[in-house]
Length: 366
Image 1 (cartoon, one colour):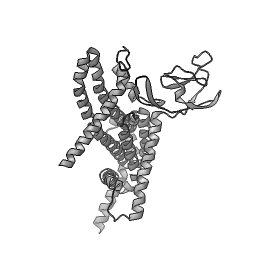
Image 2 (tube, rainbow, N blue to C red):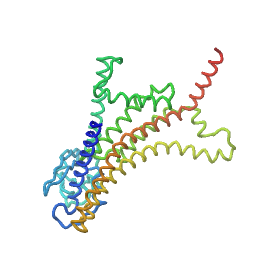
Image 3 (cartoon, rainbow, N blue to C red):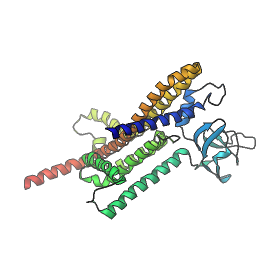
Image 4 (cartoon, one colour):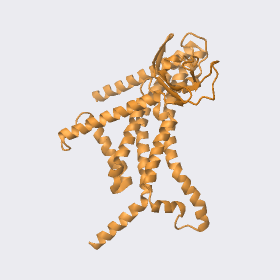
């Protein structure tokens, strides 16, 4: 019991630190630097969940603690340009014929106006891209280290360390996600399902660290994951699946005419549901936490006493939501993986029925 109490205290302390960190960051969005500028909660929140060309950690006075990221742009007219995002200062500085306009690299002419005649291909390393690459490296390192332990110790030896923590998760995905939905073909799709689960989980957990990017709260990221799942689902379909789509059996002809477009639309709605669900849930969690923190400054604009008085309430709610977000990080990774397995299983539904019928016939013959 004492050990559990210590763990709970550590979690609460760490969560409070994260909230205080967010408080310090938001404080500099308005009023924290000594200026009389009114605090705009909506602008501050959207700024901190959006992608950017630099990693902004916090601000102390006039000192901005940031990590500039590389700008890589190519133009058929101007060629390749590579430079640091620190060359841009709040979108006002022009460097090598480019400027930062609302977090987008745009070409400008000699007068500083946007030059629409110049075509630009932006390959810059944004905060989301860098964190996603870090997640990939983390995933590879974790799985390769576990694979090496299995190769050295064998599958019969009891797992230890990181292997002991990850193995139950792998077993859970195999037994509760892959096998029930995919039948005997689960081994064919298990590597993909495990990769999706751990990749989303790692990005979700990284997104809860101070100053980290909200990768899974980016619609482009979830859209790409949904597109990959859609391709896997389409390659798993068979004639039975498409037969139910274009000519549903057992219904009158006029009803078929209504069901065909509905069923065909459902093929695209399934991956769209995966995309929107992950994006909306992860973005909502970040917005709720930052909203509670913002209440301190909203009340503080009324009076200093109100701001300080509401701070404990705001921090308490923020810590509570943060702990919930830790749970949501696992739940959303599971939901995306489980629904992907369900949709793949539906695409192979005809094969399952055929295999079950064949198995019953074989059992009768014996």
